[in-house]
Length: 98
Image (cartoon, rainbow, N blue to C red; front, side, top):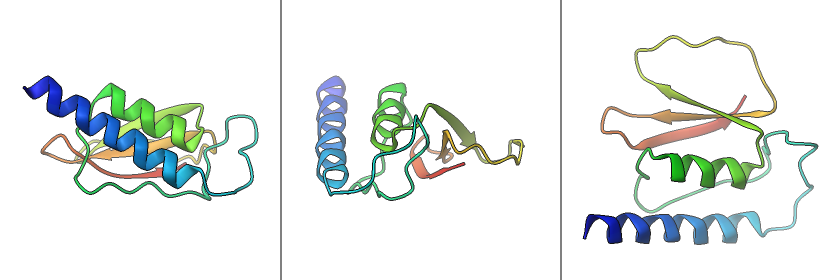
């Protein structure tokens, strides 16, 4: 049952990304993280590798960095990276390029 719910959430996430990403916009340059799109969900996504990959593909980024509260990270800006924030409940709480 849990697998079915997880699969349904992943499918819903993919559909939402398809709708949001289908709006006409300039293509990203060679793997640069796209700043011209948004990704919205009705419920917070679980912090799973599958959902990280859905976001990475939606933003066309070459890399991702999963960031958790209380851990220090380097401050340099990387235009090819999508930064994904994960909260204490292991849910994706935000994302941004850099």
